[in-house]
Image (cartoon, rainbow, N blue to C red; front, side):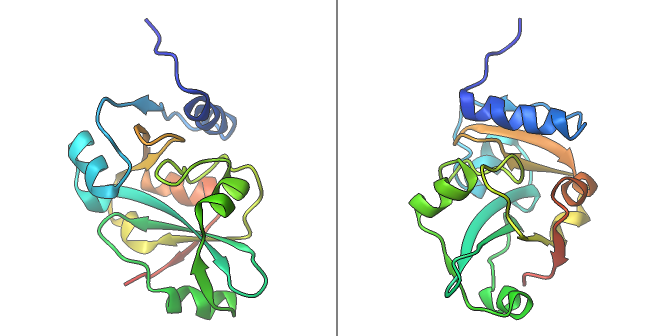
Length: 160
């Protein structure tokens, strides 16, 4: 029997399929809204959770996607050096406008608008596989960490 996914989760599954990735979106009974919730529900290390965080440049309001290990905090100064502008955490409205998803379910791909600035925490590449949000607060998918780079074309950066 095939599970019917929520509309947002299905859009992420479609984006994965279009990229040719053999990843399956799962909707879990427990919350995956925070990295710790996700790790507890999945049964993996918190560092294997991909946090998809949306920031924006302070003056030009360009979206910035940071794919961070669940164990790490983002040091904005590291990102500001690369984008040559201060960044601020995006609010819920900006996040939904850019990605099409609510905070707590933002996937690394399948966004509504193109995002020029994408950064990947180099610590995620230390794992064979990582888990990312898939459009809802309880939907996730597992992927090879090397696929994260291939699917997003992000810049690998040291966050800590």
